[in-house]
Amino acid sequence: MNGLPQYTRSQLALRNGQDKPEIWVAYFNIIYDVTESRLWLNGKHYEHWAGQDLTEELAEAPHTHEVFERFTAVGVLK
Image 1 (cartoon, rainbow, N blue to C red):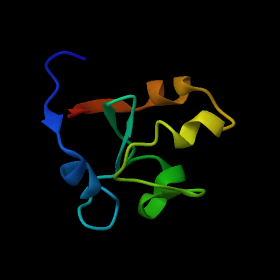
Image 2: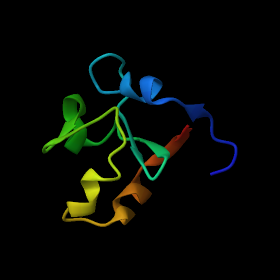
Image 3: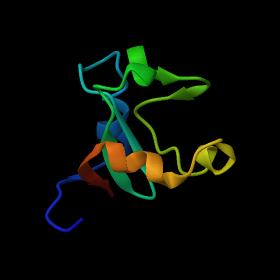
Image 4: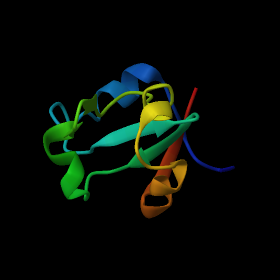
């Protein structure tokens, strides 16, 4: 993931599907763009909200980390 721009938690929080058109989530410090996913409409996916680090929350998800292979990594959470 070298070469990706770094973003703060505050910058990530703005990509929540409400404040800016981008919908981003972080997982293990990598930020993914989930804007095009119909499952993240309006920045919400089941009980999860975009614009934040979901690493801890996804430990109990019914899917594995491989779900992120479908999305483009756009940054690193600093």
